[in-house]
Amino acid sequence: MSAEVTTSLEKELNTWLAAEARFNQAAEALGLDDGMRKILRTPAREIAVAIPVQLDDGRLQVFTGYRVQHSLARGPAKGGIRYAPDVTLDEVRALAAWMTWKCAVVNIPFGGGKGAVVCNPAVLSMGELERITRRYTAEILDFIGPERDVPAPDMNTNEQTMAWIMDTYSMHHRTTVTAVVTGKPLDLGGSRGRVEATGRGCTFVVREALKRFGIPPADTRVVVQGFGNVGSMGAKLMARCGMRVVALIEVEGAVYNPQGLDIEALMAHRKETGSILDFDGGENIPAAQAMLMDCDVLVPAAKENVITSQNAGQIRARILCEGANGPTTAEADRILAENGVFVIPDILANAGGVTVSYFEWVQDRQGYFWNEQLVNERLEEIMVNSFQDVTGYADKHSVNNRIAAYMLALDRVTFAIKLRGIYA
Image (tube, rainbow, N blue to C red; front, side, top):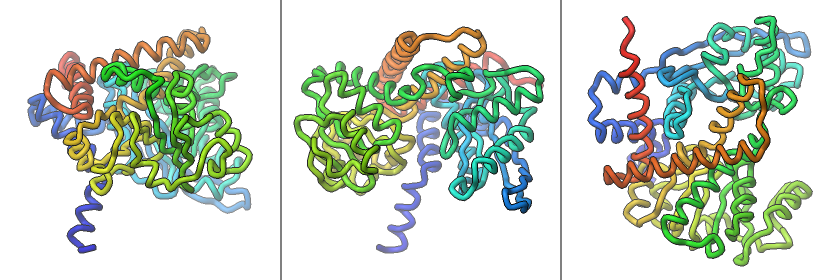
């Protein structure tokens, strides 16, 4: 491969450059002036903190923590905190902007935020992780809160991490403040339905897309790439709706059954064996073959950049529902559009998680908690309305769904900024 081709591919796979390209296209379509574009691009606040911690062996170590609040125009910042050895401020900055657009697409009253600690959780004990989390929280204490910035779990963090943050914040404020974070354990103010929320949101928008094309669920063949939380829950819920999940793809390979896989049995098999392969209810096939098989719905629900200019022309799905963040490159978008693939973009498709996080925040502030049926009904209402908003924008402006979603988000944030005015 030539250096020129390598550079071109690296540029295509840069998720942040892709997001910027889509931002520019949407801003151009909306006719936004340079000043507003600068405001929309520029984070409201970027925080970098030192986190000194005594490790279990007595050594002192200093970790670096970040919190970026991209936009506060529509409400408090909202976004996860990730722990990773290679996370950078640029990455956190881009993810915070992504959260701004995602919250605006589903029209919930949050801006975008993101946080990170540069560390390797795989080599840290629970005690060390707790001390890192509590000191990180103490360092950003003045910048977070139910009406300022509401963190949540992300890569390598979980409900235990959120419990530590909530407790640290509460101890400093001398009162229990459950609404400072979402993604908490149920016993500490978490919401029912949160675990299934992202997969359930994907199911709702897939169902709406099937209605648009007149495809009955019973005639729908689904391929899911990724069997983590989003992929497994999405597959299970789509199967319950009557769709046939004919293939499921993981790193080690794929399992296939043209009559439909028993997802709950497959989940039990993976729990027992550590792999989806050699499942009695299906046959093993190569992952690449499963990604490119003829199907009605393809759900990439694992990682970014799985559909690129290299394979987009071979995708044979009618509907592509992005359960993961950034699974499709900007160059692949063009090819998919030319081939008539209906893309449900990530900032709409996987927004079920942040929507139920919003519900958790509301319940914490009310001090009154909803049953799971009510959570799911309200999630369905928001996801269906948001799907109609995005596809309506796409039809009105003759753009694809992704650019329509960005246009809708930029339009809503711009409208809020103009209503508030520029404080001076």
